[in-house]
Length: 193
Image (cartoon, rainbow, N blue to C red):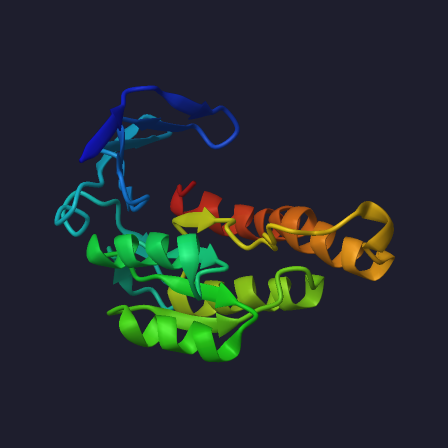
């Protein structure tokens, strides 16, 4: 079954507008019908990404029309489902995860995807990730900050050690800042969001 939401979301900083989000009952994400970036309408339904997508230029001068997203925490779970959906729609996904074995297996399952081992809580690792993306992908069209530590039972607060607290805060909060900080120049260069 398909649930549809016709709500509009807008990011004034990036000039991004997203309309008609669809979600399957099993939690798999369907791409939006239209994505508007700085007044441009770009079709994003399955099978349409190759046509009508604004051309981007790699630093080598080559023209690229396949959009390139990065999904953090995509070795499994929700991140993997998002990466799988994007590859089905023709996106060339970069999977960023600190679990090297699972991350590589995830990338091997998705056509056109590649894996970059990255601890998103580590500033130097995140900076290296986006330098690699700039060099190998020529830019970035979408960032999905999905990486998180989600453990259903953390126990009482007095049992949670300070080091474990910092690990969770750095992974769940600081990582979103770091990834966005280094991604924004690449997103702007390709009018992504």
